[in-house]
Image 1: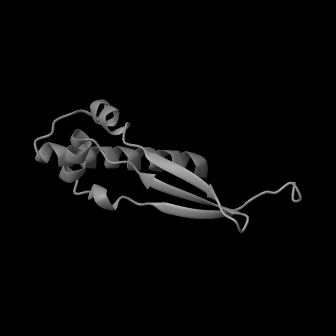
Image 2 (image 1 turned 30 degrees about the vertical axis):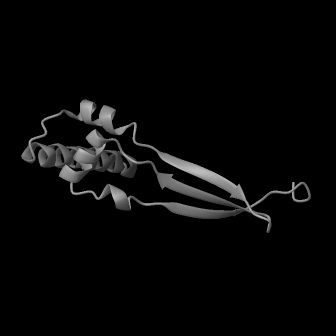
Length: 101
């Protein structure tokens, strides 16, 4: 077998194990929703990115999670995820000026 096939099989098994861990953990806490329903509930919890140019010629991109709805908070709590500490990112990039184009 080729390495690419091994990688595909490994990722498929890994994704299945992650899915089973999530659904099993929720089942132990009394939540018996299937994966499509969980995904539908959680897919509306989004991140937002704000881009701000600075006087020094760079752009600062700040990426933050939105506040989850109560049904999403309950899922996070059952999985042991503290939604108040979801990761945020701050990225500084050089601004392309007409002189550098």
